[in-house]
Amino acid sequence: MPCVKIDKERCKGCELCTFACHQHVLGMSKELNTKGYFPALVERGPRCIGCRMCAVMCPDVAIEIGIHGVQYNLYEY
Ligand code: SF4
Ligand code: SF4
Image 1 (cartoon, helix red, strand yellow):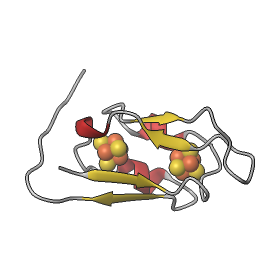
Image 2: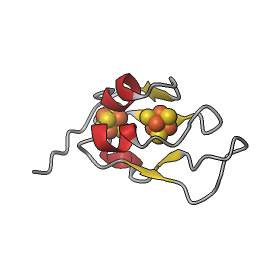
Image 3: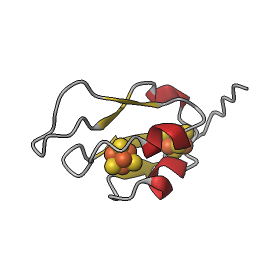
């Protein structure tokens, strides 16, 4: 299953990754990071299909995707 990691201290809270993710995996934290931004967080990790769109979209290179073993695709239209 893919594993999404967000470096909350690199994140500046632009929300681009949340719009890029069609699986609705990502959301925004209600707690500030040390720079004073509300960072992105993983809200629904098991829904991730490892497409890496969020990581490509992030201007601050704050997202890493790890993929191990079988992927389960879950699309919702
Ligand atoms: S890798 Fe794809 S499915 Fe997973 S969180 Fe990023 S955009 Fe969403
Ligand atoms: S795209 Fe990057 S900088 Fe913007 S909210 Fe997502 S993780 Fe943070």
